[in-house]
Image (tube, rainbow, N blue to C red; front, top):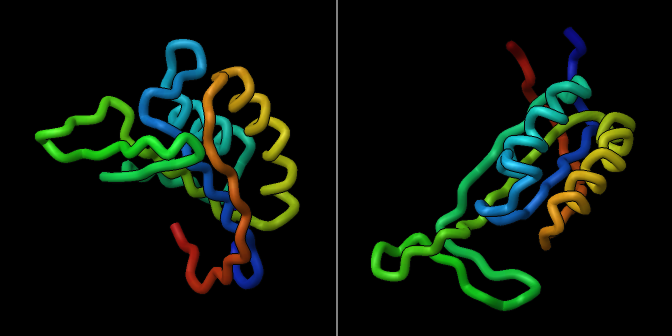
Length: 114
């Protein structure tokens, strides 16, 4: 198992819960693609409220139930591996035909163990 410590990158993908790649949720397709490519780790988070480029507010309030809650997919790994994953990610986003936001940030890994 490869160690991950020190300078790394955090790839963060903001999409909607209803975004699909074929019949599969896009967030699930991204996670399994990251796993297949041997990324160090991937987490999918479900948000309770958001707005994006279209300025439409999505919320988890029971009175105003949204069918499209925000999803954030986070992947941490070395810069080379993040960069190598980007073409596959862009292809998935294009095939899904959805909006979204992709960011890359510096990450200082302090602890990574099985």
